[in-house]
Image 1 (cartoon, rainbow, N blue to C red):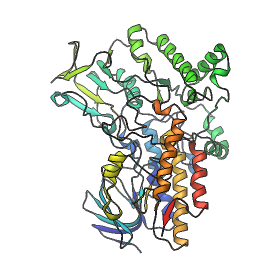
Image 2 (image 1 turned 180 degrees about the horizontal axis):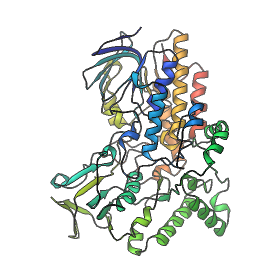
Image 3 (image 1 turned 30 degrees about the vertical axis):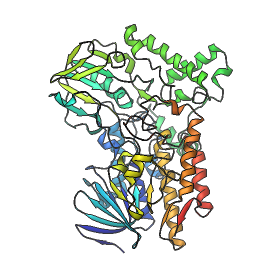
Image 4 (image 1 turned 90 degrees about the vertical axis):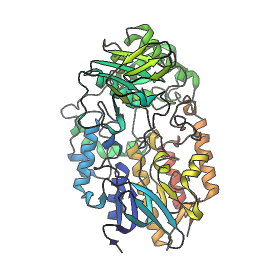
Amino acid sequence: MSKENSNSAELDVLIVGAGFSGLYLLHKLRGDGYNVRAVEAGPEVGGTWFWNRYPGARCDVESVDYSYSWDPEMDQTYEWTEKYPAQADILKYLKAVADKNDLRKDIDFNTRVTQMTWDEQTKRWTSTTDTGRSITSQYVMMAVGCLSVPKEPSDLPNFDRFTGEVLRTWNWPEDADLTGKKVAVIGTGSTGAQVIPALAEIVDSLLVIQRTPNFVIPTRNRPLNDGELDEIRADYPDRRRRNRAHPAGVFRSDNPKNAMEVDAQERHDTFQERWEGGGINFLGAFADLMFNKEANDAVCEFVHEKIDETVTDPAVADLLKPRSYPMGAKRPVIATDYYETFNKPNVTLADVRTNALATFTETGVEFVDGSTYDFDVLVLATGFDSFTGAFTQIDITGRDGRKLAEEWTHQGPATYLGLSTAGFPNMVLVANVGSPSVLANMITAIEQHVEWVSHMLADQKANGRTTIEAEPIAQKQWVETVEAIANMTLWPQGDSGSWYRGANIPGKPQLFMPYAGGVVEYEKAIDATRENNYSGFVTA
């Protein structure tokens, strides 16, 4: 039964977030007959694709694959225009999904959940929002995203002295115009590598403050050719099946050969072919790039060669070469004309590993060698409090007064199958910590979770059960499994700042957070627990 007024609501399911995860959950569970509603901090659908609207923002999964598979009609009618979708195109797509399925009527926009409390007597959650609303629900679906809470720039010396304009890539003003201005950018991860070339085209001068160089693979983005989308549409059902059957959740032409099993010429030619093709397919050049250090050293050397070929100043090229971690161990960066940008006369690279940032001044920055740079605008592309940030900023109280923020802050995030955490009944995580999430096509990962959730709720109802949560022993074993699988690869060697381990946040517990086994093995695991009467969960 639904009871609702302006200050309170009683629901079967509350969804926190209205990005890709939240919208599909809302559509699916509403269709299953549940009284369900979503809350969204932004004024529009889209989640990360609403907030991250900085110049150059683009997805590294092809547009035709970075979309829902559950609506074949949209597959046949939506007009993607580029191989890799820009932020505005993705947001336009999600708006179209929301409109087509009349989802907005069940979303509270400009609303943040600030507190969630479990009531053991009623077996329900009470969630409080920053608008003063109180929402009770049997289940809470945390569709909050893996990269939705920005890292605050606490490690920038005397940052508050700077009196110029500060822009943050994760909340870019829609009316921002940097044409002709003197600009500095801090951060050269995925966001920085996209925004830097875009800004270099329009600003008077651009200072790039690099803390850790990244391996940047060329996107090779292009408009879709005439008839290309029609061919994809004709093949869409099979394409979706191929995506679901690939560990990365998106089909790519992986080379079954190992890098060190071929001679140096074949190895180089293969890398060259993949480099010219661009995109994430580069990582499929050989089967062992993320498992064999010698193979990874070979691909690192190749990228170093490409940097030397591209960047005209040898000293700048040398500073742009990552040497402290294997390629792929940190989030692979896909961007357009990144290395070429450093040949522009209005672009300057400042590397803090060789010349530390001493202090911010009122008008810019000063480095330890005494060099100073003045600028009008500072752009922060400094990353996120990955995976856990959106959970720990909410006051979540589970059974017996347990505080999720305290447990995850001190011990690290623990889940069973990336779906549930012990002591917090009926709180379901969606495509986040403990699941493939960012190591796969997020849309494939999201659809896996939503489908499992739909089955789980139906099974709970059919069996007269009202609660489900992770069993502590199964949870501990899953955390160990996630870590063990990661340790079979080169991913854990992602330097001291890898957000896969939370190492970019001072004091954050160190453990590998995404499941590195791929979506195929993961689907087997979540299907197995359901087929075995939800083994590893406590149900009542």
